[in-house]
Structure formats: C-alpha cells, structure tokens
Image 1 (cartoon, one colour):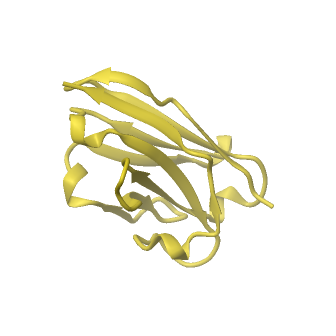
Image 2 (image 1 turned 120 degrees about the vertical axis):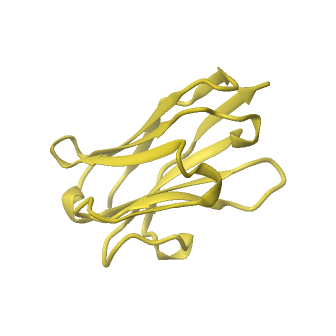
Image 3 (image 1 turned 45 degrees about the vertical axis):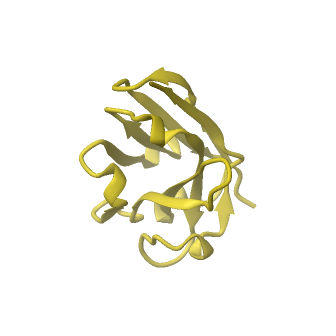
Length: 124
C-alpha cells in the first residue's frame, strides 16, 4: 500500500506562488507516473498536470499552462507542483495521485493511489 501525503497548501494573494509537495511512503516511486487534480466547491474533480515515471512527458490542463509546473525527485520519493501567477479561480483542494503502470494520464480513474488533499485559497 502506498500512502501519499500532500503539503504546502495555504492562503495566497492573486499573483502569488505556492509549491505543493506530494511524498510517497513506500513503493517504487521512480516507476510511478504522478498526477495532480483539484476540486473546487460544487464542482467535479478536474485534471491539472501529470508527469510520466521518467519525467520526460508532462501533460497540462489549458487553464494552468505557462503558470504551473510539475516535477519529480525520485531520490526523495516526492513530486512537486509549482504554482505561479495564481488566480482566484485556482482556489480548490489539490490532490496528488500515483499511477503504477503505463505513462502519465489525465483520467483520474487510471490512478491507483490518492493523497488526502491540501487546500489552496487564492484571494483577489
């Protein structure tokens, strides 16, 4: 069983930055594709970014292109979501997820493990 723990959420003003971390407790992290999703109140969970196990392929939602980046540090069993130029519409609970097989994906149903989520609030 793999446990994922997110950290780094909080309250930030519009235009600011945050970096979320997702630490994996066990497993062969270097072989996992990782994804980030978010869910705002009253809305469905939506895809944000994903990275392949090797780090050579990434997918971005159009809404975050040019502002958010994803990276993996296999030595630390951790991946990161760097969020810049934050907007109030980025306010949501952010979840990281691990996909054990295959490449990065945008469909949440393809992920095997999920973190508990971390709240990001962007004030205008």
